[in-house]
Image 1 (cartoon, rainbow, N blue to C red):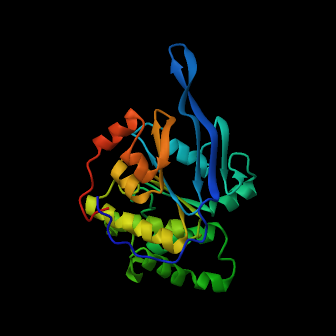
Image 2 (image 1 turned 180 degrees about the vertical axis):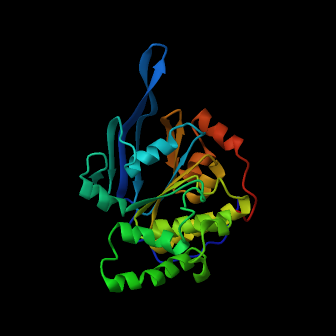
Image 3 (image 1 turned 120 degrees about the vertical axis):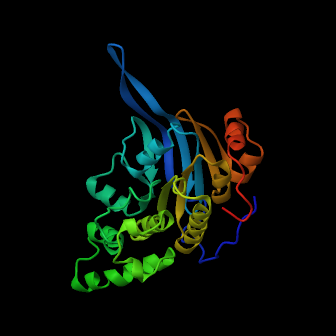
Length: 283
């Protein structure tokens, strides 16, 4: 797989080696009926991992392996049954309301389905500006007046122009919608983006463009990524390190190129063998 040319931007704002995310022995269980009894079913079991500031951790596994549940715990959308999730030194599950509100500015998700993640009744200008309004960054008249220019700047950074502002999500292609999602995620200048299968709903060529955009934005904004996928070639291309999940457990993790070249687990070898190599020149 040949890596396409990537725009080189400013150096990251954060230095590798500083753990931005620290997941410690995390479990998540849900009740389920088993005949006349109710049992607990674990979807994430004893997972520990860390993500250094400025790097990309690829989280890979088949559907149902617990990847999205783990991501939702990092975002504070799901509380762990056991264990601890620290983001920027703050325990997400035990944070106060004010701490969690401030922490949400530091981490933003980009979802799998770019259309479902956008409100069809809102214009692009409203969608991109919404994070500033929710976090009360538009308190004065001058700030409100600058929202449009700030939205235009964000759109240009993701490859769209000012003409997109007054349009609605249904007027765009899938790739353009995902660019809008990324622009919204960047509005608060977060440290961490959690990318949950961000290109699986897109055509291969369009997905390749989005992946290259993400690489460029990481350089420009000094971002840290948790990149979730079931595609090992894609994860290898984008990631610094890879963590492999199987049935809720973390079975293997290591430096991306080394892990793909010499996987120690049979499950990892199956994932590599099940996904065809990406065409040359594509992500």
